[in-house]
Length: 237
Image 1 (tube, rainbow, N blue to C red):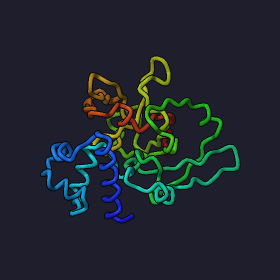
Image 2: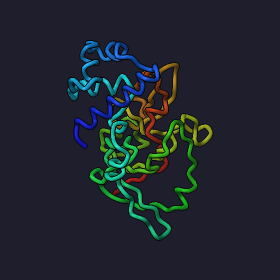
Image 3: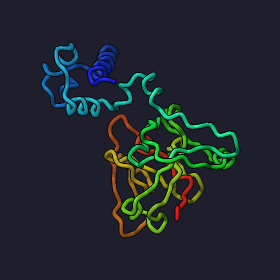
Image 4: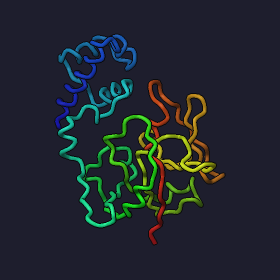
């Protein structure tokens, strides 16, 4: 899909919000720090936006590039997981950087691992927000630097199974904190998570590692930052 098409789709979304009274050109200019004339020219197809300008508009309007894609284009590029005719399910191993993508493009698949279908079916879901279009399970392999805050619970080379249909903060097992894959500044972190007022607190397992905080943006909820619950850990020797 061409960049001009993405810009046109962004215009359509912005005009829909303007027509419903949710947004004005002046408000968008104030949110982005652009001049009102700059926004007006973009909305009226008199000029385009730079990549940085697009990123700014997407950020303040709580949109992602996926919102600008034609669903048919997404489906065409999305991975079709090979069917399994036995008692095992095929699960995709991807880089942690792509763990928050609802549909995993083929180019991001590193390996395919097998898990017993009976095991996966026993796992309880608890979804907040719309995750119906998300592939439920993905695998990520962690480097040594990624496991340090969660040691000794996690070891370098650990392979984690993410249930992306469990992004609620309620404990899966009573008295035991959930371990999550969390999206912070575009990076996938593995932490325990809890909410304090308008902040999502990310707690490490190691006492020597620092606590991190994500301020929950307006119109967002904690579940928007939780990629999924870690439901299985394995270590390849």
